[in-house]
Image (cartoon, rainbow, N blue to C red; front, side, top):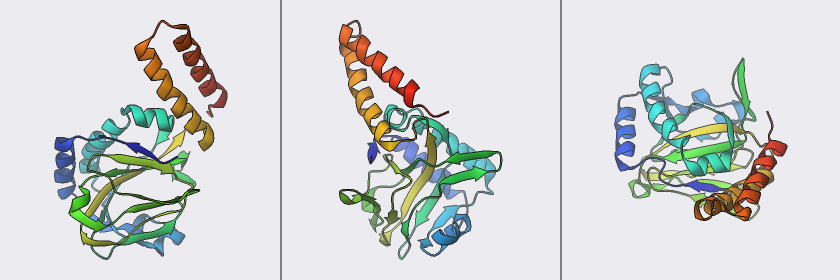
Length: 225
């Protein structure tokens, strides 16, 4: 499932995030890549040694993301990683790759079920730079307004097209879901969307009671702890 998460950050928050990134040095993105990814990765990433500055930035970006109802419904998150902040300037790209299945460090490992890209500048600020995700229905090109995010399976083959003008600025993170199976996650997200509308419109109805019971028990049945 390719899921758009609208307005994770508002305009003022996007501007604040960019100002905060302006105070952080960037390094070669290959430093964080595995052996296979190093051959196809060409970007810059915020230096993770800037611990204090990144902690403040993460509190803003991740604080807003994890509270977003679309994120919570679509991801059913169990563990989420601190993001990487990537910059692409003309000539930079990230070729076809699949994200590592296990991430984190010793003692804090997690399975990467879902990848998330939060866009931090407007599509008009750069040419190229589309996130290209291979799906059963062909390639899907994603280039969203600043503050929006997209969530997609970490197992999917994907790439970032070459930037030919301007600068692409994004935050990227990964998470392990409570529900490992992507088809079940999609069904739960769709069911929850209907559930929430029904609970808002007719919270005392028998239909609302039944759909709420069904959703909760399916999460219990399919949850992977």
